Amino acid sequence: MSGPAARVAAGVAAVLASVPALAGCGSGDGSSSRAHGGTLTVLAASSLTEAFTTLSHDFEHDHPGTRVRLSFDSSATLAEQVDQGAPADVLATADEDTMRAVAHAGHVRGDPTVFATNHLVLAVPDDNPARIRRFADIARPGVEYVVCVRSAPCGSLAATLLRGAGITARPASEEVDVKAVLTKVRLGEADAGLVYASDVASAGGDVRQVDVPAGRRTLNRYPVAALSDASAPALARSWVRLVTSPTGRRVLAHDGFAAP
Amino acid sequence: MRARARGPAVGRAPLRLLIPAFLAVAFLTLPLVALLARTPWSQLADRLTSEAVLQALRLSVVTSLAAVAVVTVVGVPLAWALARLDFPGRSLVRALVIVPLVLPPVVGGVALLSAFGRRGLVGGPLDAAFGVTLPYTTAAVVVAHTFVALPFFVLSVEGALRATDREYDVVAATLGAGRWTTFRTVSLPLAGPGLLAGLVLAWARALGEFGATITFAGNFPGTTRTMPNAIYVELQTDPDAALVLSVILMAVSVAVLALLRDRWFDVAVQGAVRR
Image (cartoon, rainbow over all chains, first blue to last red):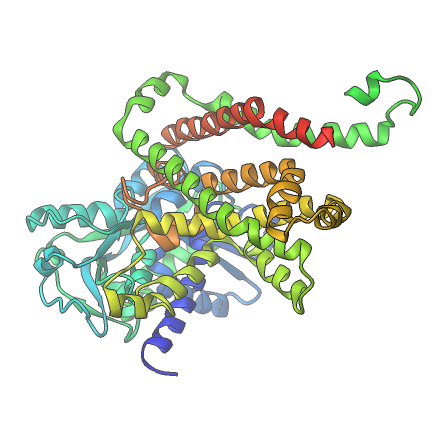
């Protein structure tokens, strides 16, 4: 299997992997038992999927008998879940505004810590069918590009960058989170998509990166915090420590994040 | 209702049936009542006149009705073939028809992309030959709706066709009717209530469809953002607004069902009873 067939297969696998995120609210959240006994539940922005999955293995290794449950979704959805009382110990969002709202509602224990930064880039399929070389190329007629919906941090950031570059061409679709944007590009269903630098790193060779000139100047900062309803507060604090530790920094840097 | 009015012959309804039945009704209505109770009604007027909501509502109604039209055109013949023809592999065909029913809608969306996306099995050659691509268009929404609604319709109509006595077909044939005439004048009218139930089920399924639509067709105001998509988007920023939109969608579906009941349901039921 090679060429388009392999890509479709890889893309299908990618989409299937993101199915729980799309199916969204609740699946897997409601079923957890209150009696934790060594289970840490981490809600994290979907751009953190690879980095936090790696860190969860480190964490389980350092805390024998402990199990880390990860749930990835758009930051806005996660905030809503926390607000609705989803049983979770740690929240990591892709922007500070969302975390601020959660903290304001009294769901956060202590102050959130910014542990990484990220910036938007243009992802194009590796064969780049629309021959996109610069950010402005997405405005050419016939180019189909996708972005996150504005309520997600990646979407509001994308809107800022598009406005800044004077691009008025409309996206073909507003996806619910950044992984959905990446999936559309991976599948070749979009000519380009605005995703985080970390997402391009996570996609391996499936997509190529085209820099957005103002991208590095409009960083979004990732805060992490233990939640006040945490049923495993000690583990929650350990997770925050791990994420901000040199090990955490190394894993995050490997997956395309920058240090704050 | 009527059975009870007719007299004491069959005895009192047993509690062991009544209690679970009551629980089922309570279980189904409680969440809806809770939804209504939480809805900020003061926002209703604003939302109903907002361009974004009207756009989503219009799109939802148009695409779901278009899907029902497609479903009817291909679904009735398929249901007839499953009910009336003996051919090898019929149970396999029926199983295949049911699969989209049990598939998580998001997976259905992925499957549609694999088939009709720009690099899909069919979509790829289509794009190469004619430059036609389906995703991100309103037509893609109809495709997604049709994919999830068709099984409901086929199962319902097939059941109705099977329930009508095949003897009628035989009688029609002995009177000289061809198979097409028999289908048109005998089988289909007899299956009327089942057909109607199938239409309602298919339409309701299409109207509420979310996963396959957002995965396959995308999400953009005016072209692919249907009411369920709009509700999902609002849920992320403004849950109150999402509640109001949900109530609007519910009201529209209840209104249409009520209308159907008055206009067609009685007619169809009478038609069935008359035989």
